Length: 183
Image 1 (cartoon, rainbow, N blue to C red):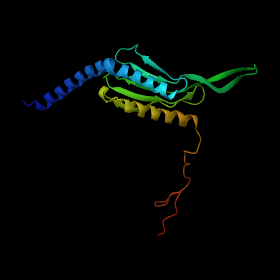
Image 2: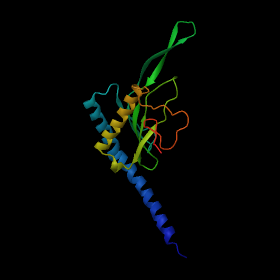
Image 3: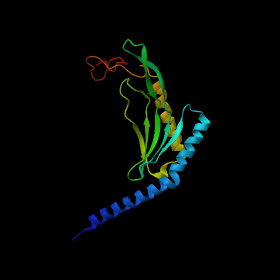
Image 4: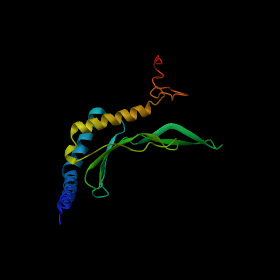
């Protein structure tokens, strides 16, 4: 009976299980403290308003380090009937999250700002999934830059970035921004 392929798959499985244990240990010993320290240093240098680092550790081995910009008044309020009472709509200002996964790897996500009760919030955007040894200062800065671009684009929303959909027939070789190809 030739079990060579099966044995190699079993060995691969055991290696993955070992990696999970190593990644979880690295999260506690190295990654979580480094993320917290690095993000706090970036916040001090950048003076980002209302930003705080939150460590969620209520579920062991599914912890998270979050750069949270908090919530604020959106400046929009709804008149409640004829009572003269106004209901303020709250704005969630966005977050950058480093979430420990079940296998010890770290998922980096950003949550765009949104106004509660005004449209649907965008789903969280996964930037990447990294092994603990792959998370370094330059990666964190790159994640912060992506996050800042996202929240800035959200705050500065308009139609300049969006091209209208073409209406009607669009023959091959003809682009709305170009002249048709003479044949």
